[in-house]
Image (cartoon, rainbow, N blue to C red; front, top):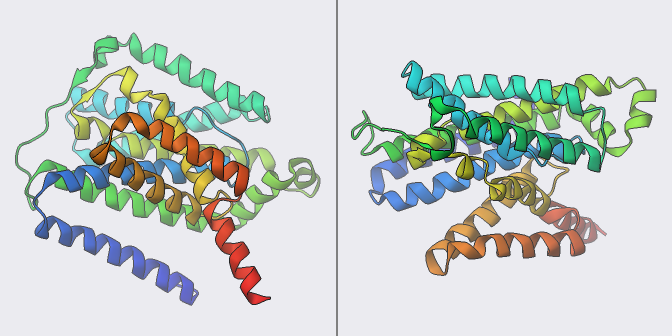
Length: 318
């Protein structure tokens, strides 16, 4: 049930964006646009997912690439074993990565600050080593994925992946917004501001943090599941790429971590800039651009783009 005018506007915008994406598949035949937008949408899901733990809760996670990669390899393994349709692979990856987030959270969330960050990075290294030696999914040499040449309702498979990723992105944004404005979100904000005070006030901190890690892991798995079918070749080096983790951290930081829309804005800004630079200059400059923007925002605008807009609006009211 839609309670407020803001809810109605939000769902109307989501519906309009999805319908616009469907219309795009009828109007544009050039597959480059779908490839570029897919990459931005994938980054958006990861930024939104990272922010649920790193932004809402205040626990900086360096292991986001591991959840993404496990989501991708879960899809690869199940596709090879059972040949399941893509929706089932996405659901399975979400379940596996959600359970992994719950388990990893239970083991690491008693750590705080830099110790938690190091623990998540160590977890990513352990999982990469495991996948590198898993022969069933190609081990270190990688694995190729065959995709159908023709799909119903769409001109190509990349169009289908684009629409699927668009739907997943909009769903992730909706979950993040709902979580941010719920009692759980208020509890996570209390943990971020002062965990000891929140615990003394009766906030179930461990339970809320485990919910946060579970949701984060499931969303990362959702982002990773279609990836093998998008690139058609997956190896541990590309799936566990450090740049994936850096992007997932940088986008919420630049957009703003305290609000659900911050990661979305950061992903659109950084993702769009990366695609433009890749086409016009070189893909090698992407890391430099992200690094420079991250340093600038952390130094000059630690609250991100959303924080800058909020400050400007407050000044106008005065």
